[in-house]
Amino acid sequence: MSEKYALALHGGAGPKAGEDYTIVEAHLAELASMGEELLKSGESALDVVEIMVSNLESSGLYVAGKGSAPNVAGQVELDASIMEGHTRQAGSVSAIQDVKNPVGVAKAVLENSPCVMITGEGANKFADEQGFEAVSDPKNYYVLPVGVTQADIEQYEMMHGTVGAVALDGQGNLAAATSTGGVFGKPAGRVGDTPIIGVGTWADQDIAISCTGTGEFFIRAGGALSVANGYKLAGDTLSKALWRMLDEVKRLGGDGGLIAVSKDGEIAMAYNSDGMKRASVSSGSDLISTTFAKSD
Ligand code: ASP
Image 1 (cartoon, protein in one colour):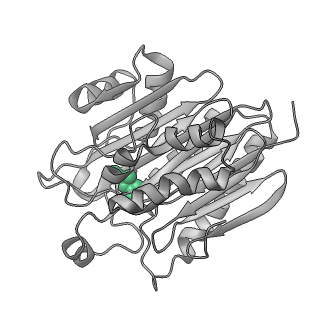
Image 2 (cartoon, protein in one colour):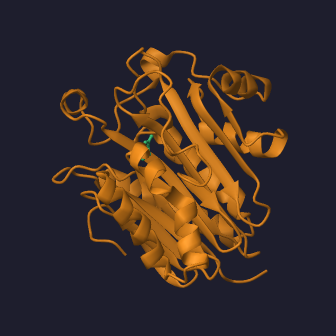
Image 3 (cartoon, rainbow, N blue to C red):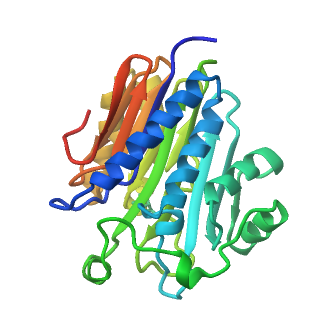
């Protein structure tokens, strides 16, 4: 096993300037340091990204899991995906309702089904069969995440948020996971980039990526796989590969951000929104957790 490991987390690219995200930054730092210990102890990248994203979902601090809001039909529909680089195995769920940890269900799709993606009622049925805990009292379970008020939801169209993690483990394997409540006030059945393998999430032998932002633009810009192709095929640096796709998102009229880790343990995080809640740590660098400072 190599001594090299790397982990990056994001809590979404929708923070508002002027808002206090101290609690969020502390939470991300705590998780990153837990993830670092897990990687040091030999845990796989796949398990670590799932554990990280499950914790982010359960915290209620972000627009994912407990921090999600209902669509216009009054239902909370969630999207999540996970991918392992060296096997290219992937799993995803979309428009799944009232499941506490959608990323866990996505991982069950990867491990226990021949499918990559299961959606809607079928995803709920699968989660049930796999024994996942459902939210028994949706009215009281969901909370507004840090920095989001009811007035914001009414004022800003397409207000959104997501959580994600990318990791390199001691075996040299990469993995990525992403989970979201999507966009506030979305129509029933709306699916963004998050559960689409190759758009919101991607991992292969060389790179792992998790995106956040207005999903429609990430889908149209080519998303995570185009970053991987820029990095591997066009010879872009990691940072250049992220910015090439992000600039396309901007050109199309969207904003957001993404995090990536390479097989060499290099981490890159970029955003063109006001900020992106994020944290990272690796065998080669200290833990950082921040929201607004410019891209790393
Ligand atoms: N990408 C997510 C979506 O469009 C939202 C976000 O990342 O903030 O559903």
